[in-house]
Image 1 (cartoon, rainbow, N blue to C red):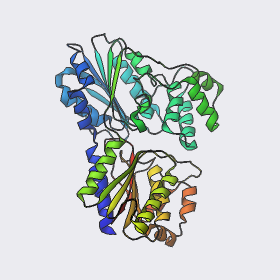
Image 2: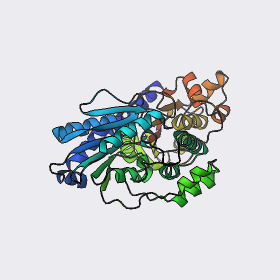
Image 3: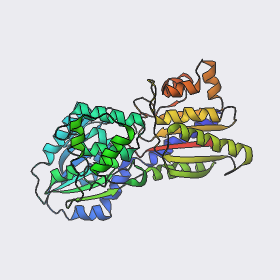
Image 4: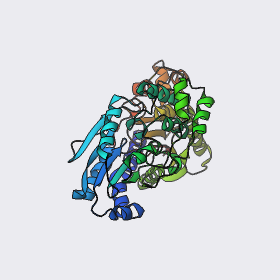
Length: 423
């Protein structure tokens, strides 16, 4: 079993290495529509703005690619994700997944940097997952406390990312295309590292420089659907519509969870396992996803279907967690813990789930790794898996049996990859 675990963690490492943001930025700036538009800027200034968990690494790649053409800028990333000083770039670290005062300070600094630009100037906007929390300025009549409260409610109720962002866009002064409006008359060229299923540009980091496909009615429906408790002034703010057309903005998606899954498959094949990709658009509760992967593993063991071992069955995407307890954890840890029930007693089976950014929920883990002995090991420590899941305390349980996956911040964020590896 130790060899299988080692192989599983090696697959994780190689998959994440394959989707680090530098290559995506260099590709976008080197060719294609965005590169052509950047060449059209002539002698105008290029100001860099980078937001999200991968902001530092994306900014570093852009700085190297553009050299003296870059006239400085601002980046905002999650605590612990800035990797040092960068010439001409002011870095801010802030809270995630709930915005804090440092997010507002960083956003205000970025807005000051892009104020007063000319039509000849360009804002190179580098966007990655986590940007919704890290790039924030409350709309008129909305406070940071309001945003933190609403974000907390949305995350706890199990709303998907499109629903979450539909609400956040309409309570923000910079989301849903409003940032591009504030940059006008300068052009905004966006390179987005996608952590959204389907790579919807207006949903990645809540689309600060993209025409918004969500409407006020959409946002209000989410509030009603989940029974969110909102002050009347927030309901009024939700009624103010976001921009549906932007004449000064161009955006491209670079890198995605599909790339992450493909890289995991290649890594597994190199280690001697036949890969099978089930989906790169996984969207359900973490517990359901864990139970499903475990069911696939049981079927492979019983019948050799849908693929014979040694093999790896891969699913990428973004699950959700319904918060019912007060424990510590994240969606990937909860997925892994849920899976351990279904693979209990199976030999040569490992289930892994990790976030590509290296942080799963408000914890120090990227995710979890379990095998056929995990449930029994937890029971020996007096931990009932079902009770732990009810308390959303996967971190504590997995830590107790040395089943956390710890990578540290990776510098990228293209959603999650989960797989069952069978020897």
